[in-house]
Length: 238
Image (cartoon, rainbow, N blue to C red; front, side, top):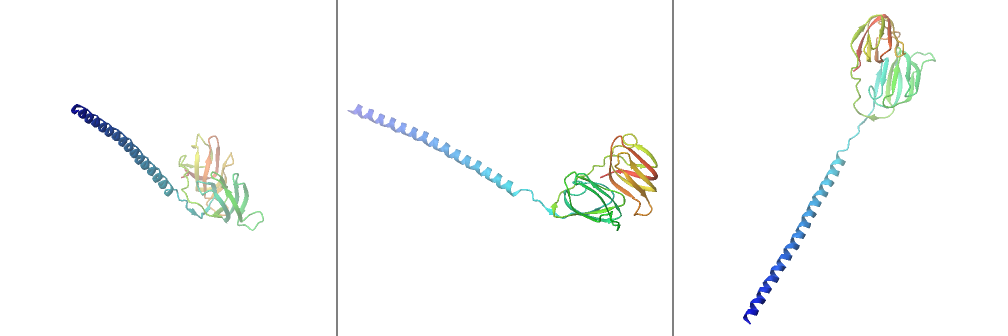
């Protein structure tokens, strides 16, 4: 009888030991699930935080009115003025206003002659559209509504500084290709290019007749520039 009791006790101990092992395994499994749950919770919180950060750092767009008066030359939307819709007003002299992109081919000025238009409304310029202002005309651009405020592009000073006396000059040989501001030095006469980009009378006399500075003239390789009766300085546009 005593031996049977010992065997029963041993059997009982083994059962208890087995139960403890099972409980340990189960606890371990639930512990891992809890860790995974915590990890997933942290991950979800991170995603939520990133979404909140993205939503609070969205770029703010500032809208402004734009108004500027331009003298004779070539001007590009995105470089010299923001793209948008403008009312145009002649403030001095007279000359052509041409823009293929904006669909403009006007003669504007302050003269009372019926040939001249003093104002033109709702001219729409897209990014990259170029407008030519010719002869002695000074033209004011004013937006019809606010446009996005952003930094205008630069021409990058492509070309070289040079003084040109009367004569003919081949771009690519005598002048580097580039975009130039042309400034009167002395004399009076014509500045013409064979591609039609330049056709100006420059001089120091009557400002209603002579141009003293022409802005952003694009001179391409192979173009011939003729200067007659006047000395000018060319410098790359900024």
